[in-house]
Image (cartoon, rainbow, N blue to C red; front, side):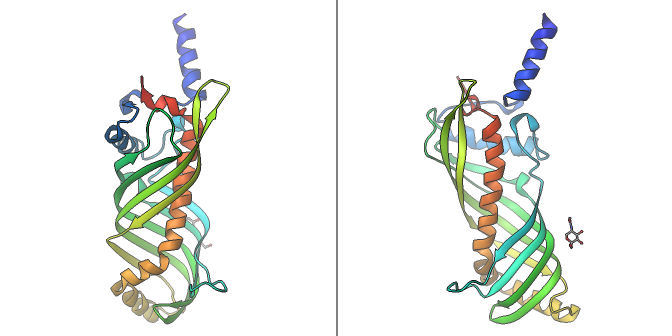
Length: 245
Ligand SMILES: *[C@@H]1O[C@H](CO)[C@@H](O)[C@H](O)[C@H]1NC(C)=O
């Protein structure tokens, strides 16, 4: 009997997501507790937690990320894309505030907080102009973003499933980012190491202008990232089951 019960519990935990006991559930509407719960999940499971559909957060890889594109009628003067890109630093985020995590799922949920250092590492290709200087290159790039503050709004839809539980479907995510510093190292600009170093130095001295140029593209990459992470969790973990009775 015990064995059967054990197998049943195991089956439930595998099929339908459940928060592990060390996470500690919150009362619905307790926004401080919910914010702390999100932070605790990231601290305890930087490599992810399959039972709730959470993928690894310490290092997330993408392919073909377009940060900026020159298009007719658009003021952008730069084509910049990453063939591949690995983002690290999300697992160190602290969620300081949550909104909307009530017993009844609202249309909009909100999470805000900060992360001390985001590192974007990958193979870039760019041409156009940056800080009114012509620029072009292709090679390895490292972008470090310091003290990134975020406020993300998530549009959610309620779905009732066959198991009689309510799930949240994350339909859209829109984040606002604010940073305290950006450090760039694009290798092989102009196919010339000395020019490349000089250009990186100019760019780093004017990091705030660089941030204004790249903010839109980086923010939409973050929107997508946050949406794909939350979507998978919300798909596995019933909305009702993040709260205690
Ligand atoms: C990224 O792409 C470059 C160029 O195609 C390649 O040399 C490098 O190994 C790739 N890195 C990863 C992590 O896939």
